[in-house]
Length: 283
Image (cartoon, rainbow, N blue to C red; front, side, top):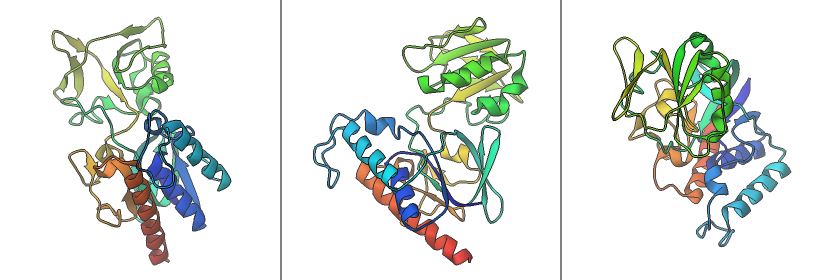
């Protein structure tokens, strides 16, 4: 049982992890060892205290050096659900479950908004996790809407199971190929069904399928954590970065604008201290 699970490796996640490490807490940190693509690709950052006119690559290098100095490790597993278990949380990663007394969400924001019907049919023909639900569609016809090349290994996994995979890539330079994989260049506008999602609708055509996988770099917070209060796509928090769920905190872009690194780092620190206070109160 961990004291805290941090989900996300952007600036807010880095800040929360460093703070909790300094507070001698037992944490598990889920994310990408390359940290944040948003940071890495930034051309110039001019308003971050202590780092004047740095590039994203330079800021990333500074973060990575400090992470190494503190002896922190990032667990590169995709979190697909966070479930409240009373006085602790179960964090589902593919087919593994980790347990933590508190959770800090630093998951950023999804640049691709949910399409019509996506959230309505979640769990009823729409899935966000290939390894969790792929076996349900063995030998069947599915559609995959994917936002990142980094998730192509999940598409490959689905190709090994399904009879037909129709991929709608929302990124350039698709590298994956398979005999049963079809690439659709049109943008889907709606997911449709009655009891379950069974149709993907485009501007000029429709595609009947048995299931639809939404593979995204960031999952809608209210989808990731059942019962989490959100508004306009952002997690609702107070000044202590507390959500409406006990022991669950959030920081960074996922809590709303401004989408600034300095703001994210500050909230990550606040969330870590709030989690520490919560843990102390439970004792």
